[in-house]
Amino acid sequence: MSTNRREQERFSLNLQAKISYRHTTDASPVIDTVAANISSGGAFVTTDHRFPLATKVSIKFYLSVHDLKKLKFILSMESLKQIKGEHTWVTANGIVIRQDDDGVGIIFDTDYQLTPM
Image (cartoon, rainbow, N blue to C red; front, side, top):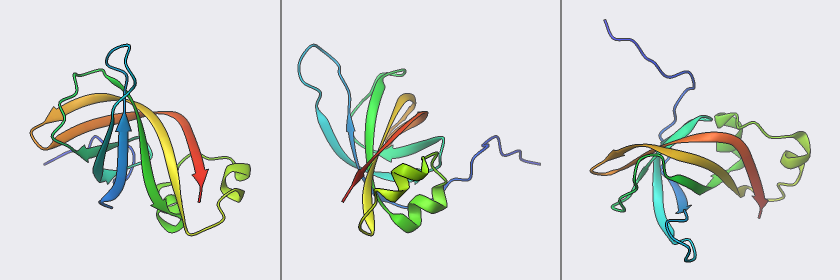
């Protein structure tokens, strides 16, 4: 019998995403990628870029309002009211907890930000 250890429901959404991180004193590179699956607690993103474990990252997801509601991100009512269109960028900070051949697993902290479109 298998046991599912995940506390949050995961969704396979194939979202447009951008990852940035500071690896030296230079400006943070931005890596365009796709989030293969996502929950309110973390995401797995496809990328060829190698990230050391425990790398702190900032990741932006381009979400429809419908998907945003499905994911149950912890957002204030004021933040939700700022969304004017059908899509928005959501920024989450997190830490790389897994590196596979096809991507990285990231666990989010609880500091989400919206960029209304």
